[in-house]
Length: 213
Image (cartoon, rainbow, N blue to C red; front, side, top):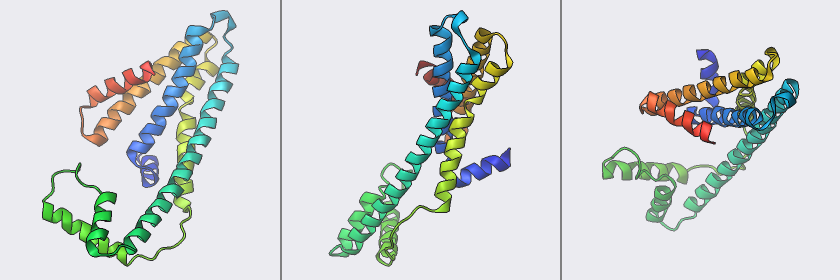
């Protein structure tokens, strides 16, 4: 399991991977809870609902992956424009101002002003000497996009398995909802471990947010 997490986090920030799982779970929970609350028990068709659930999550996984690739290309082009502006700036102070705007550290842990300015000067020098080349998507971007698609798609499983293995559709949906809410709590708990906040409070908050949405 640690090997899988290590592979994922080599390509995605933990906040990104947790958000993708959270998004997929909330979408799946919306479908299963909606079916249980809005459909008469006699009209529930577990197989049709399972197919719809899986298809919806896979479709959104593909869309989210495509958006990730678009965002990666956009951010690289934006950084390229920034470097060109810096290299064309009239003087050193103007270049440092551009770096300060691009890499704002005001919200970061308190730093000495001279250390912050030294960091900006170092970045300015580095970007002054940078070679500006046409940007393109890297193999790692496609791997990250594939991981995103897989994460969103796999969140259909907690709803899918009960629907396929339980004869009683109403009971299957209740089990699915229980598993989905439990995983939302787990996501909140894991989120807190990465961010240094109270894990139980984060679990409760994410769980309530997911149910509310």
